[in-house]
Amino acid sequence: MCKVIRFFKRLVCLGIFACTSSLLICVPALASDWPVQPVRLISPFPAGGTADILSRVLSQELSEQWNQTIVVENRVGAGGAVAALQVARARPDGYTMLMVSGSMLTVNPNLYKNLPYHVSDFKNVSIVSTGPFVVAVNKKIPANNLAELLSYIRTKKSAVNFGSSGVGSQTHMASEMLMHMTDIKMTHIPYGGETLALTDLIAGQIQVVTGNLAALLPFIQSGDVKTIAVTSSERSPALPDVPTVKEQLHKEFDSQGWFGVVVPKGTPDNIVRKMEQGINTAMSSERMQKKFKDLGLTTATQGHGFMTKKVISESASWKTIIEDQNINPM
Image (tube, rainbow, N blue to C red; front, side, top):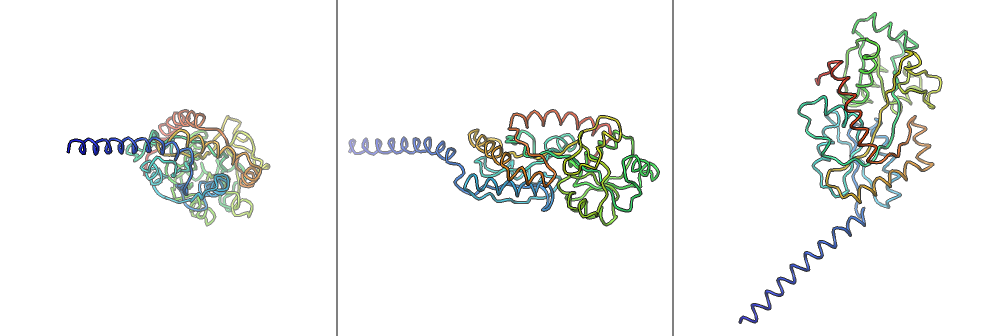
């Protein structure tokens, strides 16, 4: 009887050892084989906006490169917080990525006291794209350059409304930076997405938008809006005839939006490196270079280290703007 008991004990011990060994073998194997199932790329803003456009062109490129489906899901709300919270709570297995706007990591933490996510909830993978904003106005506004627009705004005394894709969004903060530099006042009208703001700009419900070039470009080309200035320090190749804010103010001014990819903290480093390499390869391809040029954007291949430094430096800059402009969540 004792021999039988000892035999079964040996079987149990061997079984435990086998299971433990298989787990130790499986975890690295799964990471090295990644991706073996569809990957979700969460876009925090509505369809048609810059984040959505970038998510879809990038997903197509990565799908072909990784030989795996990349599913783009729009999770809209609260200036990106809905999507960010979902990804922060997702399993850190490499199958959930988030396309973030710069403001989600640099502005929102300084603006909202009870933000449901924290920058430390994520691992930075890579910046994907950078691009200038465009100061655009409704066609009926009697202004064709920045000096005329500033004069018009000062005459109206806060009766001029500017739209954005939401409180704390990149499009909101670009306008706040312009007001900070020129000592003008406009009334902020936040929308649930950039496309909604542009629709009301064309309709005349608001007068000004400082929007992402990629989202504004079709309306500029169709003549539905007037362009006043671009916010980068140099003119955009997509709008070579539109002068910069810097040129017209004769002051240093450089405000550019950026988008990047993050994943839940705890995602294995080797998977993050594969993602970074994949994005780098995608952004370097001639096809993506052309797509981004057509959108008025610049491809960016800086990895997680550069992205982390950028988040830290921009957070400090936007904190100053938020305090000086007395910006409060609505």
